[in-house]
Length: 505
Image (cartoon, rainbow, N blue to C red):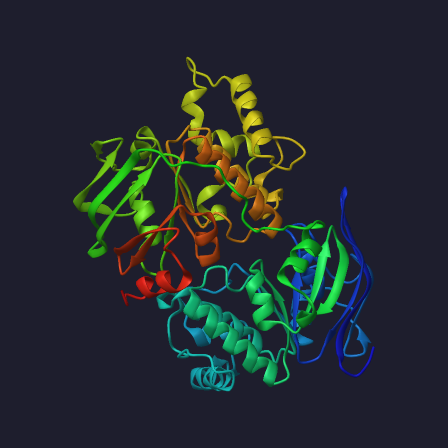
């Protein structure tokens, strides 16, 4: 290991019952660089980082990790040991305590104590020093639950940096951030790099690798495919390394031909509690069409579709028409009666019962289809669920494995399957490829095209403008709870969408 290498993985292997998660993984990470780690879900990225951060201690894997010239051997209390060694990880799912302040979260479990009591002045002054040093736009006494997701992410980073981290692992840090928040995070990472910090960066967003990383290591099926300087790799080549085949196009071609209008929303206003969340939304949706909804975080995109599904806000003005008839949607059950289904933004919280089987997850909202006198027709339930599993190519040993054991892409397919079983006329998909690897994204895109070609009308929210432009027939732009333009795809560009999303048009 040379003087510039801070970390070296040497033939690291990890086996779980029946699965070899890592196989002879070897590569180096240079000090003071941002090193991208990419691969499809199940490639071994998370397993490798759990070894590095102490979740899987020394002795539970084969091979060696050399850190600062010494073999890293983390034993009992391994996660705590890793932090003491200067290795910190910021997970995709934030681990903050909402009712505590930023300072309390940063020093949780390590509060400065004098004469048997916490020295609050020192806790907050030490927090302020960390925030100032790394350019984190926070106040130590801010309560976490009052912060936006971007500032919560900054709090997690401050917490990691408070332990004098030398290696910072970021796992999908931008999955829930707005464009402005992502740009701020990129600035923070550049600051950390200038101060000599080494970062390991994991994301499913290809553009971020090329914006922020110096080097990229690609894993596939638990093995290293390549480690190269980012400047020597093209996006197309990176995708082919990840999936093991050339992908000439990110978005599959479609033969869909949108038909008559199936949904009309006219001047929709809605309130949640005392707050007006929709302030005048109008659009129409055609049978067999994919309508993309774009907008900045807080523009009202999710509030709109959740309200149309009857599960968020109370409509106070305007109308919703399905197939030319005005309908009143008060809850998800009435939405489904009118042929509307929703694939939610957060599949783990709102789309799945993770501990339950694929079978139970798919059939859960559709049990009335299998209900007989005093009992469920289990044979019909299994037959129909198996059909959905095959149609959507859900990769799993059988219907009875728990949903939590699946990759992100296959979990998303289970969510889609359960709503397709309800035979919707209108399928709402809120960020359908969030946290999904590039190969699984392509499969979901093909599925969406197939559904639209078969006459299902799709509303798709996406935080990625490329996805909106690549998959939509038209684009509805939201701004401050209002619709601010319905653009044919021929007229939609990133610039025209962003101008409308920012209220400049």
